[in-house]
Image (cartoon, rainbow, N blue to C red; front, side, top):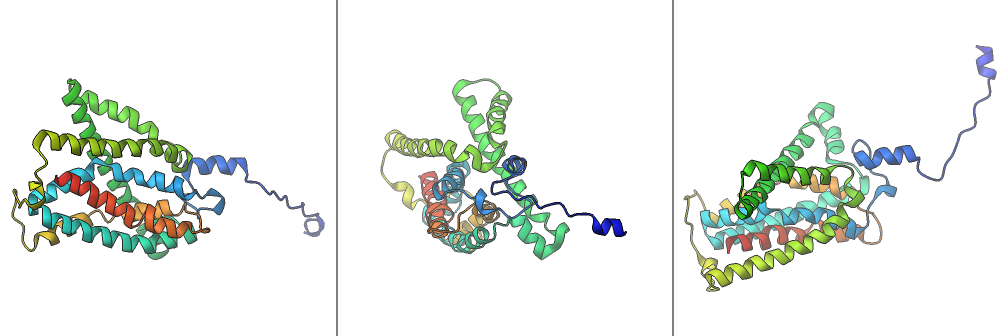
Length: 279
């Protein structure tokens, strides 16, 4: 015992740079089990570019058309505006907390519900991600089949083969640059689709006051449209997980509250895409 007490304590090794082994592991799992350090944060435009990839999902176009067919265009647009306001208000709170603490939604829920209860949060996010992937992939596969022909299973395989490599690795590695090129193409395609539809069917504007054509719903139509869009509330948890990459200085949090995860994002994603779907 006395020999152990007299044994010299090794000198503590200090480093002013990140351990390359830790950095390599973080590039794979994005600090999902730890608070995101300040050194792992992203610039405002890079983070916005990654998150805005969700705005180009075909789901929003089709959902807008479905809601308009069910309750009419006017009630559908009212529901879209209300939903965008609610999403923006809640995101305002989530973004500030996630950026300040660097915690994922899972780590935060672990503090509330314990290790077992916190499993619910990542499961909800995973199920939603799988749904969006299957929905969007199916739309692309069916469009490719309609244009090129062949069995739809073949085009499902093509979609899987080009999609899976894109999700491997960390979100901050290249997705910001990748979506920086793809999102402008989506905007161009959206404009081309509207112009083409107008030239094909006319620009009479009758779509703006069309009534319900499908199922009757109980209660006000705008309320049904509003609650339908609120069914995607789980996106707020995904936004939380992305917001933890935000830097906390130089107005970055304010930028993300307004542009990346706030009114600009939700009004484009829900309202602009929804109106295009309605038309």
